[in-house]
Image 1 (cartoon, helix red, strand yellow):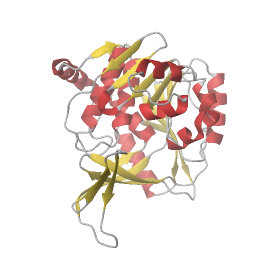
Image 2 (cartoon, rainbow, N blue to C red):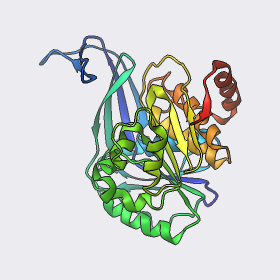
Image 3 (cartoon, helix red, strand yellow):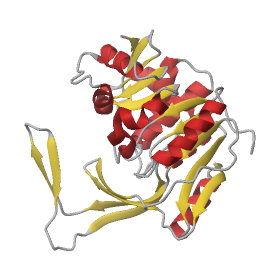
Length: 330
């Protein structure tokens, strides 16, 4: 397809969700650390078991597609039954899979998610592979670049060259674990080409070297902006989200909902905010769309079942307005 609005680049996986019936939580109050404890060497009964396609790029592609954005997925899968399952599930969602590569003699990514008291602990397997850059990619208005495994750098080199040859493309960047571990030396060249940058508060503090930013959100946003991106969005869980273009600073509160399972909340926020901006919405509306999408997702098991459809946005907007949650400049 050459009429795509967005290419989503990263990884996909099959996620298995388990809710155990026998476990204990051990928390250290002073360090805010909590641990789930199981009896060693025991068989642990599971209350329920569910399967879902996951992975940051796949979640973004489904989320933006449901919100009316024509999205294609760029990723490298294993040549196995899991890879085939991922392709079929995403095709059924209307995601364009033209640029998905099945790498021979490799396996696909897999995660096991333990759901306990509304929070999730994830055991994730990133299959060792070399990410392949497609021979010919269409020039789209936007590209969303997100989490990849440890061997991401060679792909990034090709991607940066391609992006420089196509300067009209707006890049939205949401780095994953390995990219964040690489720090500015590993992703600084991508940040310099980034239009929209997504991070949570802790990631923003570490990347910018800002340190504790409580009560200093405006200063934190500015510190991240100095790394190169034109727009910065920082999410902070129950404390809401923040956005800046370097001149204007906006905060949005969260919609009060009961969380059943939180996997994919960040990806849902990202796809909602990005879809809003692609559709020409304001920075304020982008935060609201992201907040609504995230609030919907955490009411279901898995990262995709609760993703909002474009036709549902007016109803959710009314719900947001009636909740009294504020969107304000800071």
